Amino acid sequence: MRVTRAGHAQPTALALFRSALILIASITGWIIFAAATAKGNVPASAIVQIRSVLRAQQNAWNRGDIDGFMNGYARSASTVFISDDTVRRGWRTVRDRYKEKYSNRAKMGTLSFSNLKIALLSPDSAVVLGSWKLKRAKDRPHGRFTLIFKRLPEGWRIVHDHTSAAKE
Image (cartoon, rainbow, N blue to C red; front, side, top):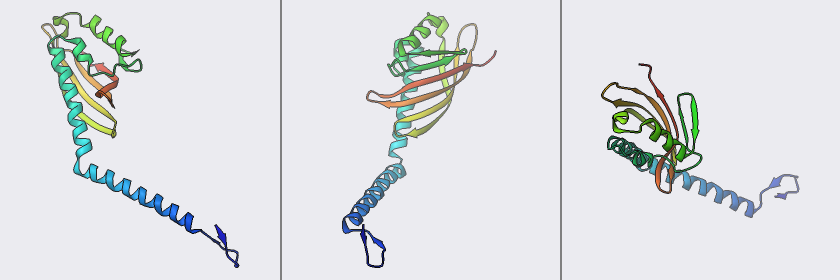
């Protein structure tokens, strides 16, 4: 800043130049983000990819492939699964729970997901609400889930799963 004879502060040319650069960079970033969003490229492709993960999980389950089903989850110690008033942490812990609870094809039944609502929280995270249903010889358990997906280097993966079963 430069002070005039009247005691007023005036910005220097360098300060004005820096301010202009910041303004131009901000406007350019906003225009690029707005253009990508307006075209629907970012959200549409993310939603398609998340639906693909869920479809692959459903297909793996229906083949009796729990390990394939688990490919939809982040292989991380911080992966969270909540069900039956219990919080389980870690991909391996979640997989072990599925393998114990669904130890054969009769217990697994046929899985279907429905009522999927996918909302992007950011370019790298999303929340999914949905319903699940198992068709088994002796019963038809069903319920709801809330999933938090994160875009990881290997693709979109579930990092947090809160699943509840409806009362029969």
